[in-house]
Length: 233
Image 1 (cartoon, rainbow, N blue to C red):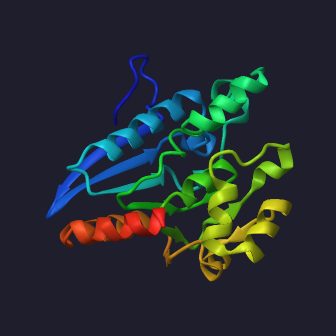
Image 2 (cartoon, one colour):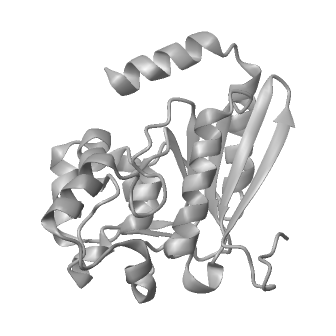
């Protein structure tokens, strides 16, 4: 397992898998002891990973998932909130960040035009739900759950949730989720269209990788053109 120079566990693991027809970039959120909550260092590594995926034409599809059994990602690490955002920013600095920033949770405002698969095996809360929503294909194990849990702490959705949720599930389900912070099960998320496919416990990552290999085997150019049209249209 990759480690930092200080011997501590690396919070984002990156692996390239060369397969028939293409290559898969596997991105693992790797702070299971903190429910894969994102702090500033982790966000920096995620941003680097998303830039690599965007810019490397040899990479066909990305798979994003969380380490451990309990959480995909529980959102921003509130203990390290000052590492994710400049809490004393001026109005001008805030406006500049909104217009030109890449997102506090690490590259969430980069619109990927190659397929991204996200797979939740546990909690996908607050910013973690926003990360999950950035998948073009979203899978979940039956024990997963989803919530705009930041309602409890008075923290807004700043990594795309207010944009993605209404477009993915429609205004009817999106607004109660955003307003109340209510937790929903994987089955309910599947019914709403937030999740494309449900997997049994422990099988989600294998299914995500199988789907990624299938995408790599398919002709690429027409698929990418159609995905770009759908995203930008």
